Amino acid sequence: MDKSILKEIKFNSEGLVPVITQSYYTGKVLMQAYANREAVEKTIETGFATYYSRSRKQLWVKGETSGNRQKIVKIKIDCDGDSLLYLVKDYGVACHTGEESCFFRNIQLKKEERPDPYEIIHALYSKILDRKVNRPEGSYVAKLFEKGSDKIIQKVGEEAVETVIALKNRNKEEIIYEASDLLFHLIVALVDAGVKFEDIQEELLKRYR
Image (cartoon, rainbow, N blue to C red; front, side, top):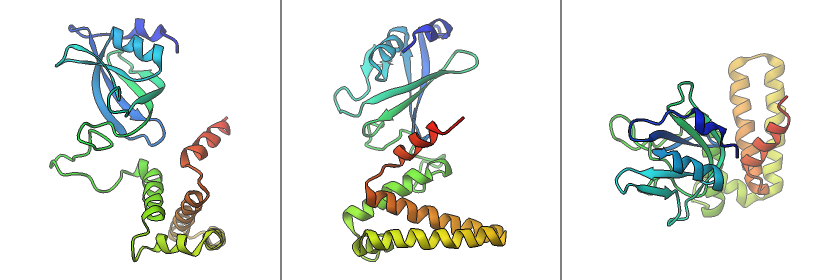
């Protein structure tokens, strides 16, 4: 990874720069920490997020003891050069509390139970995967998995036809409803087939021109 970014970073009077860490695939903000020049250099050299602990006054590699490491995909610098953004593939949770993100509470200090719009696809994928594994009683998705792959594929086909009809009718509300049904059942089918949504994102990136 290119180290040329180092000369553009404006470290503060303590020799530190704030770093926001974000999931490469979901867009979820995972944490905020600080890095000094050595930490940024090590991050670039190793390909794993390394920070500077202000309390311990030493470098720390995220996940070095817990195993919840953060593999760097991209490093971005803001327009003023005084903060960094690490885009990472995260292996496990980011927060020491056991939460996926350190930003799991709202301004009322209550835990957010619903995903934000930008992460809904991945959140649905995770919930559907949980339904496949745990098969909770009364779950529509669990019942679909119990009926098998053919039934799931059939549902995708049915929803695709209904979406086509809605598009033909040019009814916006109908299109939104049917397209949501199609996407939902397509995610069920992807989980059933063992295809990760990250794989779809990577394929779509190849098609971006």
